[in-house]
Length: 353
Image (cartoon, rainbow, N blue to C red; front, side):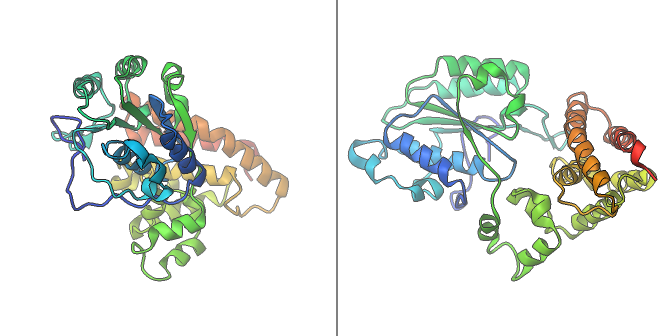
């Protein structure tokens, strides 16, 4: 939770940070850096959405912001568990969480992290620490920075104060300014495996619910992301997703009229602030699954199936860019979805029956 007036981390004291599953190699690397006291000015945690990057960033911040951790022989006692589920309490004056703010008037999150957000962060961040502890800034996500905010952050990365660490979280590092990337030590994260997803959802799902979702294809569709998997707890979402999936099973034929009716008929998905739960998110998820041959199409011709998979792989970045530009220029979602379906229909035109 972010305070509206400041960038200091704040939240209910009773809320526990979730245990971070998976990412064994990445955690081992971070642990070695901290133990050897070879902490860079900035880490970039990049990888798929919803796999625990921001949670791990917060755990690292909790450890480093604790003034007792970096003293004397304490580093030698630091373990993997300390990064997965640290006992250290949050030091509100030493952890800064920078992300898109909530717009009370419009009841939506702002489109970007602005330069004013970074300036406010800078004023707080440059206050010197009175002990051995680190000041840690988490930017989640870095691609939410507009150009002015990116340039302002770059200046901070070029001249960081002593005992400060930036952890930049990204779901798409290609959209980050190259000059910012060059200032960061990059740590790539991969999707979670089935065992990790099962362990994370213990206590969230009813008994056997995980196996039911697995048989329904949710594990394939969620692409190793617990955030995406949790969407499948919503029965309306499952119905909506499966209805769209049925239409795509008939590729290269596409009932565009029915697809438009489905995609635009549910207002809660048409304008959903969560990109993974939006109508566009479902569309991209299905195209990605077809590209990776994770959906068994109805057509029997093997060579045509392979061609459809290649076409879907080429379509994905085009439609993803279309969505990004529509958000940037505030284009009506219904119009953009209509354009995306036209692109899909045209791409498969030569293979239609």
